Length: 556
Image 1 (cartoon, rainbow, N blue to C red):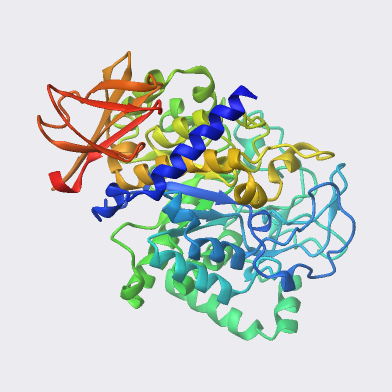
Image 2 (cartoon, rainbow, N blue to C red; image 1 turned 180 degrees about the vertical axis):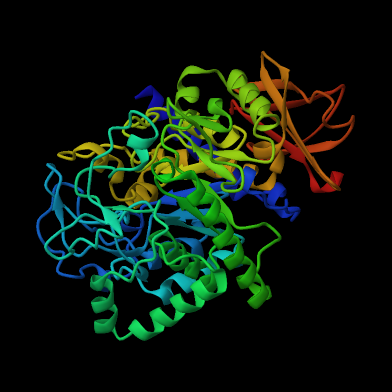
């Protein structure tokens, strides 16, 4: 109860601060965007927000499922609504990653946990079509338009490694396209790549250069939908232009590239990277870069900045300590060069659990500015398929925010991290616990949840304003109280901040370590107050244990 009261009081105080004029926002000085310091919000589309109840049931997917194993109504329109409302902007989010929105298998499969449908998006039936449970292409077009108008990028999820399971409604494709066995045992490189991830998950023959015809199942589907000739003409044009063989992987790459040329998406998170031959991703890089260049040429008015197309890879169990090479035991593979901007950092949750702030920050500073220079990692603390998330019962929501949003590298907020959505559901088994519906009711009416969200918002907006936080150099100023600086320089753009954590409440003297000159007016974004540097220090008197110092407009 005492912790609840402390959190509640903090929430009231933060909310009060937010109602004042936020001078750090008022100054209108925008940092250039870099993926290396991005804050990426990741959600299962079906579990985030239901913006259109009329599309909740399609393809007869109405059988009773296991707990949290069926479609629950979330859709692209629901995401757009939250973008329009300012939810992501208030959180400092500058990119949104959604689970795959392509058409999923029509049937269901029982994996021992009850019937499951492809609500999560990773059981593809047709890469060329959106699943109506998620929405329409027009819905996607509007989402991108609205998001871009607010400086938010859209990242889709690319699956090239496999199709969806075989069901009575989803017959298996020809053997020239897929293998149906053996299942991977993950003992070495070959038993991780040349196999199916699990039983009944047909593996695309990405290693094949054999020219293959379209699967008859796809031909009959397209003809029934009246778009066979159009799709074939586009494929003919793609293969003529690129010279690639009509091998399975290049068909899929073409279909995924269409979302770039047609809609102008900003990036792909790539699924199951290490289960596919490494050269496939270097080929994919060439395809998506060409598509992005084409989009920019044809739609210069829709281009946000000069950044290239973003690719982040899911190399399961890759960690920043691996630096560039992932070790299969019998072979090491570098997935960064000529392929990915970033890899998802599966190690981060363990670092957050086992290391203090300074040890973690110092480690990430050293690796990112040396061995991973020109690349980065995407840090996360919980996700849709990590069965061992950091703080699943949400007992440490403030620490979670501090470690995720203040560590160098890109940060992935998993939907509900910011609102303490508990990663557990009665009767759910396995990863279903991670996939409960977004807790909007708590955000609306629970003071504790509101306090937690307010903390995330302040940190998130501070991070978004300052490239120094995610991409700058780290330097400890003092150990007790714990204060550090982050500084960033790129050409004429310079940025510097001073941050204090776990400070005493009440009056506190904070050294700025020479980052800000004498007599400069600086702003504490956490308490929303201005202070002046005197004798190398600033003095604050409030009930917060955190300080976020930045230059005020008057000092610019």
